[in-house]
Length: 219
Image (tube, rainbow, N blue to C red):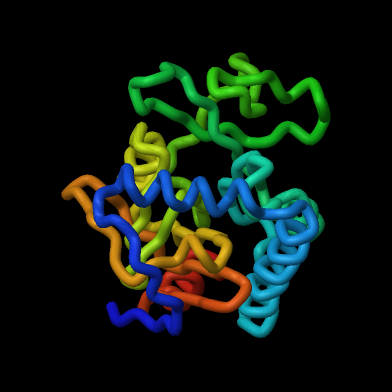
């Protein structure tokens, strides 16, 4: 579908690795104040769009992830989604380096015991929990290094999310970003999966079918 954005057009190297390096340098310069300020803005924009729409998040299956210090903070998002009655799922890497990852429903009864430190130093669900089929999800929040104005995405390069997203055709794919992570164009491979809705403090990029998808999956 058509895409709308009014983002800055930084001159950056065109290879995925060059983009990762340049974005990482910018990320390292972010202050904690800026991260918190931008995170609050992005989450507000998301819920503002949701709340003026005629559907509820209650009971919907939503995949989140544990954000790293240089990413948009998702703690407030997680809290707000739980308050609205959503079922929250988190990724669990099963075979490091293979690109294999599964999604696990958060167990509200066990709290901190749900978590273990995963192979990349990120909290993930304990091994004992059964995985959910990605095709059952309604909405997936997707991390990324950089995003293009046609919904392109570059991750860390291992392909974990591309594999999950390829099996989640009906789910709405949403990404939160800092302004400098949005670029005019990003090189893509045939297996790279696009994002439906990208939100940063200053910009918002929506696929033409975003709200049709929301209305179909979140009714």
